[in-house]
Image 1 (cartoon, rainbow, N blue to C red):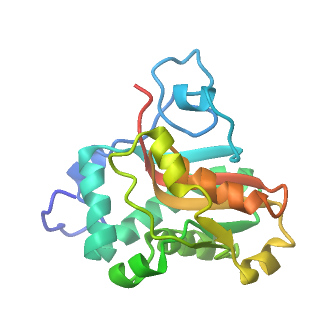
Image 2 (image 1 turned 60 degrees about the horizontal axis):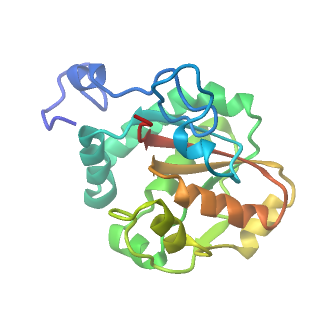
Length: 223
């Protein structure tokens, strides 16, 4: 993450950067997993004022400038060594949480086909595939992104939700897999307002009353 070469014995990230990872710690929102300032509150300000299609979410790190840069290198510059580290940490930190929710299927948040061709891969699919392989769960590409929406950056909560409204649809192949499951895990890299994950969950739950959970690498703070 700092750009320095790793020394012998280091894997994925140097010791100094690992020590300074912005790990999400208690107190956190019991709904989305976002760090909150008041341990007396069960949910963050955002979750308190809106309903949700997602039962519960988890995140590994807070979305600092360092994490923003590192994830951007993975997504836009193809730094797959960083992607491998992210996937390993998602499994290490999320393993027990995922298993305790008795998840039956993992669904990555889809990219629009144009963006996927440009980048060469979908970072959420990469993370979901690693989790699925190691947890022995199926990956279901149940959703397709029907519009190449404008970037969410710079939009407020209402604009983000409007920008994504109705953009995800279920695939025929996905419907066949989902017919036999009830508990789904959505995977993405970053949670800001949660608008993307909410729209994905909404599309899934138009088909059946699934219990939808979510996990991501980074999330914002409630303070």
